Every structure is written in C-alpha cells, then in structure tokens.
Image 1 (cartoon, rainbow, N blue to C red):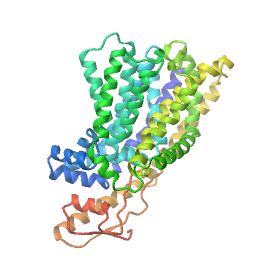
Image 2: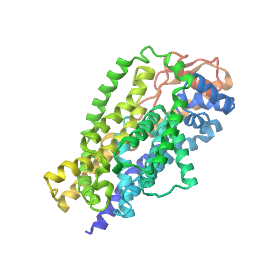
Image 3: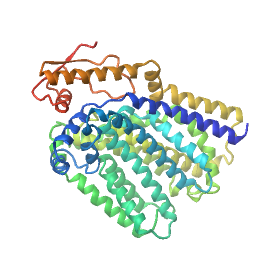
Length: 470
C-alpha cells in the first residue's frame, strides 16, 4: 500500500473517530449558569448587565457578551442552537489547528498532511481534556474557555506568519488587534498566557522573534492594556470576597505547584500522546531539513521548552487559586492542556535538535508493520480510552439518550408547575453520562443550582425540590 493511501486511510479513521463528539452534542443540555445567564439576557439590556458583571463579578469583557446573550435567550425552542455550539467549536478548533500547522510547515507538508496533523491535535486534545463536558458541551464554559483556545491558536498562526511578512497592512493589524482584545477578554487564564507569550517574545533570541520590533511593541502594549481592563475590574474583589482562601499567596503558590506536577505527570504518560510522539520525531527531523524554525528549534533550548511545558500548567492553575483559593473546576486546566500539547511537540523538537540528533544522527527507522500497528493502537486509544472511551460508551449503551429523555421530562414538569403554581418536585438524574456536564439538583430547594432553574422558568418564590431518581 502506498504512503498516500495509508495517510488517506488514517485521515478517514481520525475523522470518523471525531464524529462521535458531533453525535454527542445531540444529547447535551443547559446546566446551572446557562439558565441564570439566559434569564439575565432575557430580562435585562446587555450594556447595563455587562456593567454590573464588571463591577460585581469579573472583568471578562468579551466572553460575558456571549454568555449574556446565549441561545437560551430565544427560549427552549432554541435548544438546537445550544447544541450546535459544541459542533461549531470542534470545527473551529480543527480549523485553527490546521491554520497553525500550515503556517509552520507550508513548504514541507502537503495539504493532506496538514489536515491530518490538525485532526491528530484535535483528537489528542479532546481525548485528554480534564473535563470535556465543561470544555465543549456546557455553553457558559465553552464560550469562555474553548473559544478562547481556538482564537489563541489563530493568534499563534498569525505570529508565525508575521515573522516572514516584510510589512503589515492596516487590515492585518486590525485583525491582530481584534484577536488580542477577544482572547484576553475571554478569561483570566488566557489573559495570563497572552501576557507571558508577548513578554517572552520580547526577550527570546532573534531566531524565534516574530515580526519587526515595532509590531511586537504595539502588540505587547495592547496586551498589557487589555490585561489591565480584566485585572482592575472591581468585580474581581467582590467575587474573591466569597472565598475564604482567596489572595493567599503561599496557599496559591503551593497548590498551583502541586497541580502542575499532578497534571504534567498524568498528561506525559498518556499512551496516545506517547504513540503520537513516536510518529512526530521522524517528522520533526524531516521538517528540520526544510523549515528554518524547526532546524533552529524555534530559537529555544531544551531547558527553556521543558520549563515552558510546566509553566503553562502553573499559569493556568494559579489564577484560580489566587482568586478563589480552590481549583473547583477543571475548565482552566482544559486551557492548560491545549497549550501543553503544543509545547510538548515543540519540546520534542528542541531536544531532538540539541541533544538527540547529536548523539543519534539517524533515528531508528520504523518498519511499515510497526507504523501500521502504532496507527491502529492510536485509533483504538482515541476511541476506547479517556474522553473518547467515555463518549463511545455513553452513546453505545444509550446512557446519553436516556439522559436526554430525563432532561426533557424535567422541562415538562417545570412548565406544568409554573402554570399550576404548584409544588415542584424534580426527579434526580439517574445514571448520568460520563461525557456530558451535570450540575445536579440539590436537596436544599434554595441552592443556587435549583434557583437557576427557577429563574429561567419564571418560578421565583416556588422552591424546587429534588426528588428520588425515577
């Protein structure tokens, strides 16, 4: 079988593996903050509400717009639109990964190879995300964090291209500025990563520089200005006041370091990532013969890339600990994993250029049989292990479909209770899917999760009780 045929078969299998995530979107449902934010979007004008969020909750000036005017403001009839968001984000992330790979290896890799690389990256990312449900299938979290991830990948691609551009048009500058503004306004972790990226770009050797000094300066200044808007939001202090361990430097530092070690080890020993690494090293050697960036390891040495690999996890954990004292959810670590993957492969290139190639001039050549076995192993791992395995089991066993039916029944009970102004007793969720987010009803009818339903369904004053599972 020819190399082209093998690549085509692998591409088809990867694409087919990703279809289960599109299928899963058919069964996702709004949860918790989705309902309360939609209620605010229905009952309040956008600008006054955004001002209130900035003064009383957080400084996410970009993602708050999307959160406040999400699909549910159109009513439950727009549930199909809510479910289209994860599909669009999966596609957008794939396109962003393709654009980044194309900007790095346009002269060496064919379009088919670039697309295969984008699908591998997307598959690895979804497979290993700490919380896939919150990352893609919970609207409030998805437009805050995953949209920011995709935009960040586009931004990185533009930085790579900017280095080879002799001049930047007004349109290109405007696009770059809009990306910077949107990414930093998405979440605090994206803000921190953007400041780190553009700060490092000013310090790194010329071989890894991106664009002219003037362009780098105006981008850095814009990054700092946008970061100040997020950091100086009065709402940050209001939100932090609700958490006893917020703004405890030693607590934040210690736990961020512990989480850095925990996640770094978990991700580094992932079999799927190790298989991809075996494929990547020969590819990196090939790219080094034609692409100057790879030949020079992006101007980085192994110690710098290894440090960056750990730093990206720390930088995503620390804001949560500083602001709340806890890592109560893993949405921020989804961001860390996205850029951990990128840095993992950059790190492999750096070690190969500076260490491996000097000790072993020729890498062990993989036989066609070994390549085939590794390819089959990768496809199996992506579908049977991690988030891919959870998704496959939820779909095949019908657990996701049953969850969909339970949620639809819950909506009908809420509507009936609203009309009759009667006691609301909602059954607890039975055998919930592992791959979808779930903020379960609480025994306390005044708990915030219960109140989110009450707000959206117009049932203020009617306590929502959680009953036994059906």
